[in-house]
Image 1 (cartoon, rainbow, N blue to C red):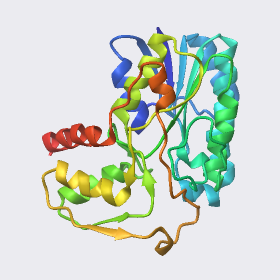
Image 2 (cartoon, helix red, strand yellow; image 1 turned 180 degrees about the horizontal axis):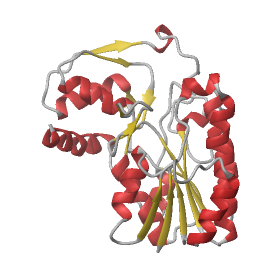
Image 3 (cartoon, rainbow, N blue to C red; image 1 turned 90 degrees about the horizontal axis):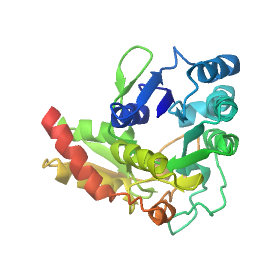
Length: 289
């Protein structure tokens, strides 16, 4: 199987490339090699490689920045997906695209399913929902993930490493610094290694095309996740509970973000619990420190 991986080098794309390489031919293209907002270049790259699968690891993930620059967010998260989808369809390739829990408004009290109606509350959320719609070519998988952690670190433009929220929490705990975490925002943390494994399984088993939720099973507040990570790291974590309303954020965040993996389980792909994922992640962090 030949795979074209757009957005190579990003957190999730790094884990997917590591998972697939060796078993498949993977051509990873970073942004400087393939800008998904360049329709003509995307069409040319896909046509030249003629892959079996196109995986989109490119994303504009600056939630607050999207409020300031909606054009940039839409260009990558919506129209970039449209370009990849059209190119993949032209060569009869399967498109794999990743979306987010932010497409929901966060007012639920039970995990969202794929049938739950989206209600995006920010520019970022709307751009991701549009991306889902543009990804819906005949052969496609859209996986909603959230609160990703682990994998390769992306970088700021000046070269400084930048991990996810949970990666930065781990950094603080390992350094003995105080951690501030929301105790009124509920999430289902997603370990990139588990998402990569589920992605490979979907492709290998030829599961029905469509939309799937793909997160760590279960849910907890960010405060609970941070405290549990401290225990897994075997370090005293100074976790300070914070209310969402006490923090000034440009973009509105959903308060209840838990997603259900039931549809994924229906095709015999079981996602480990977020606690199990934290254990494996903590072991890797301790080994690397």
